[in-house]
Image (cartoon, rainbow, N blue to C red; front, side, top):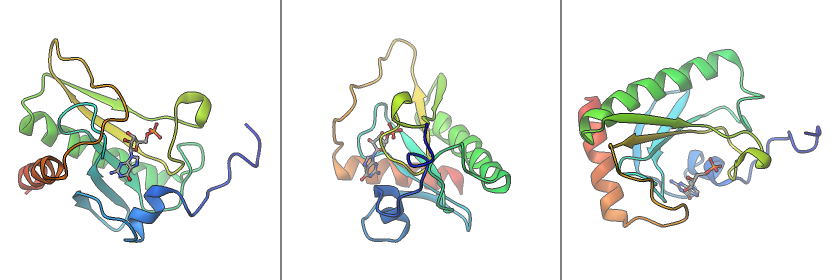
Amino acid sequence: MTEKTATYENDNIFAKILRGEIPCHNVYETDKVLAFMDIMPRSDGHTLVIPKAPCRNILDINPDDLTAVIQTVKTIGKAAITVFAAQGLLIQQFNEAASGQEVFHLHFHILPRQEGVELRPPGIMAEQDILAEHATKLRNALG
Ligand code: 5GP
């Protein structure tokens, strides 16, 4: 990985969500983190947790922000298990294109899993009203 590929770019889609330039189905927010529904969920309840700080991936985030993000992953993950009656929880996080990263603002995927239910293929857009319903259920579970 070169210095050039490690540069944070302000025009990535999650930076636009953080600036309010494009909408998202908001699940949880603090001064340090935002959690929202993945627009192409690979399982019901597929949620993304991102830092508000401009970090490309786990390689350039500072420890305080990473702590806030991972604590949020745990909080949302537990709520997602309850809301989606999950038997397991998959956490995914990619660093650079060679690993599968497509959006270059750090994000953790939270994927509730059921025994015997495969993940959906990537790239399938969900209905907006379904995403809204899932976000509402998660927000309610979080209190
Ligand atoms: P990754 O970089 O971890 O490979 O994947 C990026 C993730 O962001 C994918 O799961 C994709 O569905 C999701 N994603 C891409 N564009 C948007 C968007 O505009 N809104 C939301 N909520 N999710 C997005």
